[in-house]
Image (cartoon, rainbow, N blue to C red; front, side, top):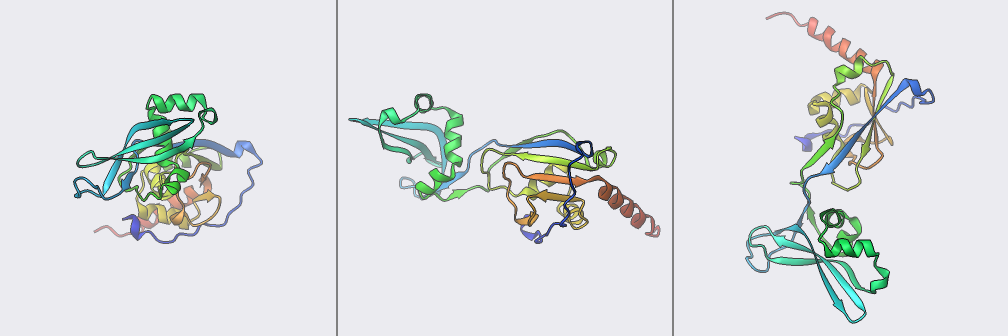
Length: 235
């Protein structure tokens, strides 16, 4: 369904937000609940092209240097492959707290590297993000709730410390519980805009993006919908 999204350009509106009473602020914190799969032909079973992150590290000490790898496993046979995190690094150059996390197989640290663009680039990894699951920590606020607020602009700031390769439109639809068709109409009417300005359709979720709902435009949009529904003759 998302593949059929049109290249929606935002209404270029630049309301001044100098009056804090005119703006109400909320946050949408996007957290992954799984890691992307690593696309790689399994050398053991040869029937799988995907590896999952095991959340475990392998450490190897050689003379005066240390190697650290993040272990991935085949989704079918559990065959392992290692992703380089540190290579021939002097122990004194490794943060003690970070080294402890490697040694303890700290899951949060493993996930940071599983999503880290530099680690992905360095290991020439091709990842499959299609099956990543995520949660959004947010207040349950509907568009109807927003239309009844006093503030003119209602801002929702994205909090996302990890790159999920996730479309912003997916998050907006999920938080407001609306369809793609409804979102397209709201964007076209200038009811919803984002900062920085650009194509909402092409925008991926990034930390700091602000989704703004314009209350007056939303009310006008709802009123127009009611008028259109009232003009439809009864069957």
